[in-house]
Image (cartoon, rainbow, N blue to C red; front, top):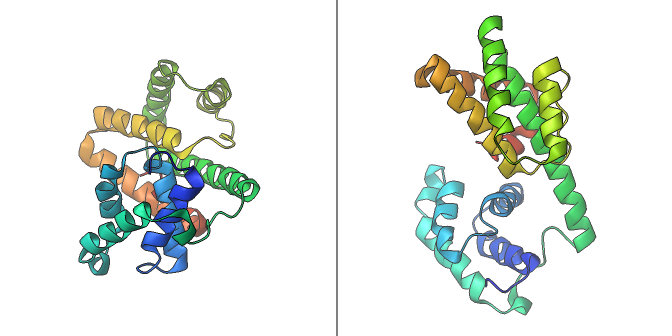
Length: 212
């Protein structure tokens, strides 16, 4: 399986999950695999199945779903369903849309979290976050966008930053919240921020989930 193309591996994931999920949930699950597990070995599939089987109905089927995925991965390419992303051009276009939506979800969540902190503490957190981000090997365009946002409070525009990177940035801010306000308050701020974005921007919910 490791020598197969991304499209073939995605087809295997799609084929293996097809009997268990409705189409919308299935596509979200495929996106989650692409964001978190596409570069992981097959052994990581057990964690992936645990991620996507959170409701009571699916929890009882985890073992069956895992076997279905492993079976699909061992099948010949001709036995797999078509790539849900379509051809390579469509896939690339979809990836850009997903990344842009993830960036929007990140920006809205960060704004919702920061708005819960008083002005002086917010300023302190921005400075600490800026200092922490300078230590990371971030793409220059993303670092400059974050610098403008943190320093001048301009609108955060990250374009098509990958969800994995956005997740690391969110985690960095959450760590700073824990250090400055305590883990209990940090959890409350994160939970309220998520609820706010879900209520105000419901279409961002699947992209918000990829950050958490």
